[in-house]
Amino acid sequence: MQGFKFFAPGMARGVMRGVAHVVAGVAVAALVAPAFAGGSDQLKAFASQVKTARGNFEQRQVKPGQNGAVKVASTSSGTFEFSRPGRFVWRYVKPYDQLLQADGEKLYIYDKDLNQVTIRKLGDSLGASPAAILFGSNDIEKNFNLKDSGTKNGIEWLELTPKAKDTQFQRVGIGFKDGNLAAMELYDAFGNVTLLTFSNIQKNPPLPADHFKFVTPKGADVIQG
Image 1 (tube, rainbow, N blue to C red):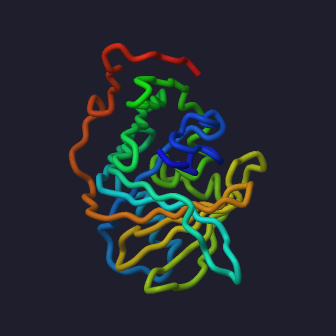
Image 2: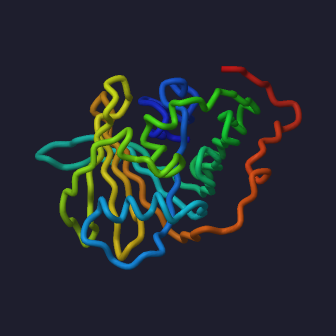
């Protein structure tokens, strides 16, 4: 999992390093409502209407280059499923096969190459992390300040800043297009930026709670966080 910034800064090759800082995951779904006046209205509709979803994602970690250019440091892709609040499967397929899975109480991080599982308590950190936008309750404004930030490349954007002072993220950009949540931009406290785009969205598919039960692979080392 090349540097998935929704969890912590500087995670090269996996989400193992620093996962204790932000315990959560990410995914996205299409809205069922028609076009809205602004991104904040669409986000609120997403939180209240979309309870489950599945789809594909592409993740890019970028760094500023010369003359204002943006350099892509790494790219990864995979699939996701979620059932709010607090249940999800976020699987990296390329360039590495790794898995993050939560059952509503615990977060499981599986590195296939190492055959190692790290287990963390999901706890209250979901509510204060960017993942709460997608996996948490619909009380987004309890943890974030929302501000519409206009249209860019046909996508209506809004900016969220966490109300808590001890989070790993300074701000989160969320983009909607034609009523669908299409992209996210994550800006962490270390100046790193992670871009997420989503495709092949299915909204509100049947995903029972036991679908998110993690089964430890045979012979895997288990580390309790």
